[in-house]
Image (cartoon, rainbow, N blue to C red; front, side):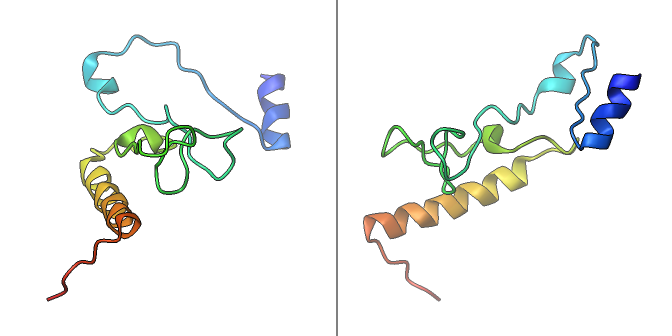
Length: 98
């Protein structure tokens, strides 16, 4: 308990729940592809493109830091649309408005 209290004071705290979970609890995997600006500390850039492969984008929930206990499908779709718009700009395509 003292080690947990020390970590809390230092601002670093993590919790590991040693429980067996059914498929229902683990269906929305998140946090497997960290994103950021530095290729040394992340796999994806801010537009969800891999740092190593120029034309590989990851638009599932793996770039989320964690899950909120709610179904992330709408957020995944919204991010996929955002990345899609980025790809259209990158390719020089112009969307017709209206």
